[in-house]
Length: 94
Length: 262
Image 1 (cartoon, each protein chain N blue to C red):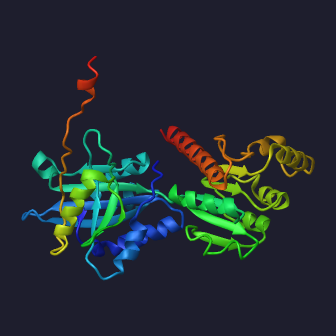
Image 2 (image 1 turned 180 degrees about the vertical axis):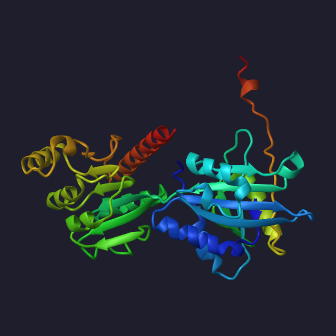
Image 3 (image 1 turned 90 degrees about the horizontal axis):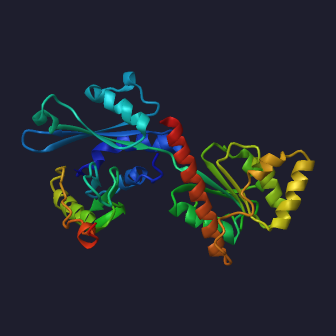
């Protein structure tokens, strides 16, 4: 059972404002990431309004995408690759 | 997933918010369809728990996965279709959502204020109770979901205490602490904690047992002195130790629930 608070009730109150919004949600992750499926964030043209996708590169990339798809309201699924390979093995050879 | 027109789903979000406010859990189902022009068509559905096969309308091909997710309480991404190509075209993302655990703070003094702030930060739905309107005010508790001005004992008694309710007793004096505790000591609350020195608690235990307000075992369920032992001195430190104890009890109870469900 999750204890995280979800942002949807707050999203609802934001919808009453007359501005274009994009709601980004992590729906799948592979490997080890700081993100969890279900993490959601609401963006306007100006940037993050509420919620989080876990910060970092993913959130920044999602924000850029979200802002770009605002004008024509086209929803999309976007894959974000996290750069970098695990270094633990290299540093601590067994 | 980027939903570029969340306005289309306001009705679903409204149903969801209503359910959670009435303390009912459910699943948010986002149906994602890939159109021939690579454009996505989204629809969102709110499925209130208990989710049963016969109640799933419009998402029949996913019904098995939906029922399973409703039971597992974990987010899931389902794919429909017979072959790989088909499966990429229709997705259903399921998010189980729950009402927040409730934190009831009896006593709107400095500690109550600090605990309310941390409670909010830790995803509790916060209610503050005090009989003094000048203390239990919106201005002093902007982060509380509810501020109740009433006799402390009566207000605690009137609160709908459930197995996901956490009660922190930090009033201005022993008498009010005792009244608040008496009102909830036999409740189903997940957590009862009361501030005070070991001596005060010892005396209160004697009183409760001799007056038959609670058995010794019932009294020993109370976290008193309240909070984890972290050498707290200041109000903020005490609040952190109380908050840490709340988190500990909450995770233990969730873990236990997960084991029971499995």
